[in-house]
Image (cartoon, rainbow, N blue to C red; front, side, top):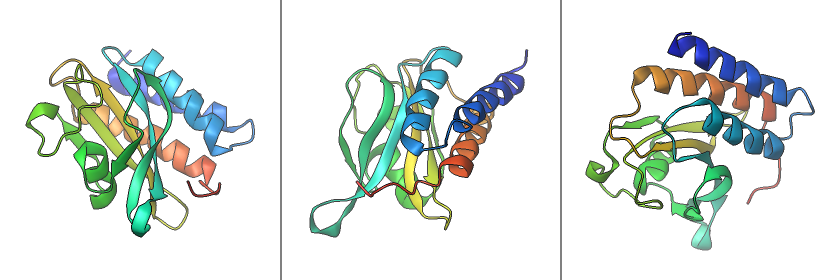
Length: 164
């Protein structure tokens, strides 16, 4: 199979998870497990969810994931995840150690891809974060394929739960 076919299958598997009710929490938990199992050379796959922090400052709070213990809160605009959320732009980083302001939750991570997730009104409500211990592990096809997964999650879940 091709990488694109693998991502099509992964997106279809995540879509199947949403047919059991579509509440965002179990979908994200199972999606992180599927991603971790389906893609080679990963050391972390999961989600950070938007939250209002102290002083009404936005941040990302750790959501469902697979991997080692992770940072629990990331300031909006900091690190790869916070940058993706603040700019509302996917981040494809071949060498996280060269990324300005990188947050080393797991020192083994060498490359990363992060995609913003949106609610029905288009507001960023979180990010999908996938890390690898291999520098340059991700390319544009990974970004596009994980974009399919993010689109499925956005379409099913509505993220209508209580804010964190």
